[in-house]
Amino acid sequence: MLITTNAVMAMRCPECGKMEYHDFSRFAICKSKTVNINCSCGTVKLIVNTKNNSSYWLQIPCLVCETKHFIEVSGKSLWSGEIIRLSCQDTELELGYIGPESKVRQIISDQEQELEALVDEINCDGYFHNSNIMYEVLNCLHEIAEQGELYCQCGNYKIEVELFPDCLELHCKECDSINIIYAETEEDLNVIRQVESIELARHGFKCLDSLANTSKLKKARRKRSKT
Image (tube, helix red, strand yellow):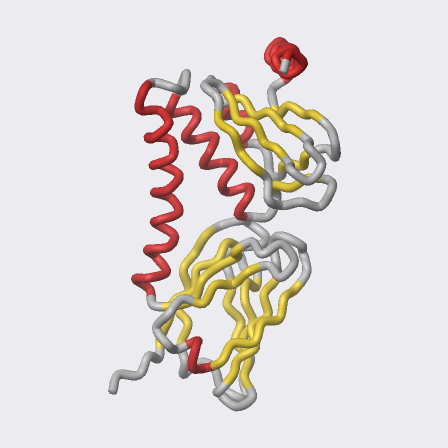
């Protein structure tokens, strides 16, 4: 009988935002020792302890709600060879994964491929004005959302995204707020690359854009006023 003694954890750092893989060893966790898993920047990403090796307590500094979540996982589940999904208990957003290295890396790879496939599928007929810029903007938006920094003032973290040839429209279904992100030029890409968080205004309309593109904002408002 083969017993699993090692796993890998993948989690984005709540401080620097970097995604890293960490070894997770069964023998490194014992009743008399608390194990800290740290980011390369020094931030503690996970604290693990156990009293009897049949169950483990995972303490996770949450990058979404900026608190600490305590999750109890049975030893049978943790070393089963299946994926343990670590989620924010308030928003249900996934924070990281623990499991066999091949499966964990596959999940991260699938998430990246889904984003690429989305762009390729929509742009098969030349839909976007600049598909490369749109892909990079979507990638930035994905990273912001993964860190829990895409949300609405009303408290909703499940923001819908609608794609247009030259921009993205973020929509909160809870309060009907809108945020426009342009994705057509290098200038548009540089704008979102400098953004760490996106907060939709409750019942409001915003535009994430450079000051040089105020004409685009006026145009967007005129378009929405006609609908």
